[in-house]
Image (cartoon, rainbow, N blue to C red; front, side, top):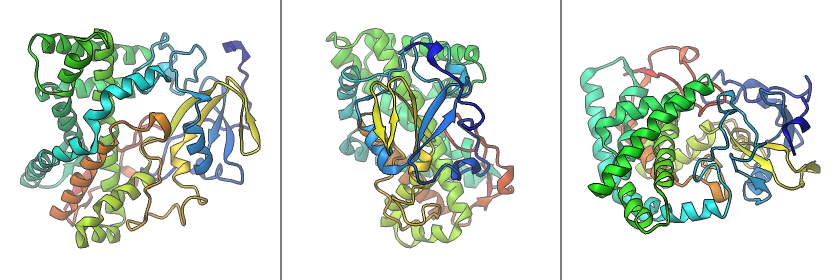
Length: 404
C-alpha cells in the first residue's frame, strides 16, 4: 500500500482527535460515537480515514491481536499528530516496534519494573512526597499543583530508577515537554536531538564510571555483552525517561482534580487507607490520560460485523473503552468504590505499559498522602479556567492552581 491509496473520507467522518473542554471528561463529540457499533469512522489531520474503536471488549481483543501493527517505521503507519509526519522511519523502542524486536527489548527490562522492585522503592517515594508537601504547606496557597507536586514526584522517581542525575531535571523536563508538545516537526526534532545527545553522553559516562541504576544494569548486562548497541541503549533510556514522567504527571494532576471536584469521594480515601489502590484504578479509568493508541492493520480483521482492511489506520480509544456501558455500570460516574481493575488506562496486550507498577505506586502514595495531609484542597480558579493540553497530547492540565 502507498500513500496515494488514501482518500479523504469527507465531511461525514469527524476530525480526530478533539480537545477536551472538561479536564477529565471526553470531548463532547465523543459521546455521540458511543452507539450500537463498537467502531466508527474518523478523519485524521491529513485527510486520511481511520477506524476509531470505541467498544471495551473489541478494543481489548484488537490490542492483543498480532494482526495489528505498532511499527512506527512502516512507511504508511498512521500519523495522528502533524509534528510527527516527518519521522523519517524512526521507530522508538518498546512503543513503536512489533515482535520479535519488541519482545526482545521488553524482556531486558521486565525485571527492573516488577512488583517486588517497585515495592522496594515505596519508602523513598513516600519520603519524596512528604518533602514536597512540606514545601507546599510552608509556602502556603495559592500553589500550582503541577509544578510543585505532580511533576517532581515522577520526575525524581524515574531519575532514581534509571540512574539519571536529578540535578539535570530542568533540562530533560524541558526537552521532554518540547518534544511531546511541539507545534511543528522542526521543534520536535530539535528537542529530540538535545535529549538524545544528553543521554548519549550519559551512557558513555556510565560505561566509564558505572553506577547502580537501570541504565547501568542495561550497560553491564546488555551493551557490554553485545545484546544491545550504544544507540539502542540511548533510545531505550529516552523512551523510559519521557514516558516515565510525562504520563504520570498528568495522572497525578487529573486524579487530584477529579477528587477535588468530587469531594464526597475524598472521604473514601480518608476513611480507609486500604481503599487507596481501588480509588487509583477508578481514577485511571475515569480520567484516561492516554486518550488513544495508534495501530495499523496488517491483515483484514472483522470487528463488530465490519471489515477493517489491511493497511487501514486503527485508533483504539482508551477514553471511550473506559466509558463503555457494556463494561461498566454508569460509566460516566466517578465512583471511588468501583472495581475498575479491568480498565485499559495502561493499554492492553503486548504493549501494555511496562511501568504500570511504578505508576501505581506513585499515584497511590502521591494522592493518598496529598488528601490525608490537605483534606480541604480545592481549586483556586473556576474549572473552566484550568488550561488544558491539546487533544493529541497526553491529557492533563498545563497548570492547576490550588488552595486550602
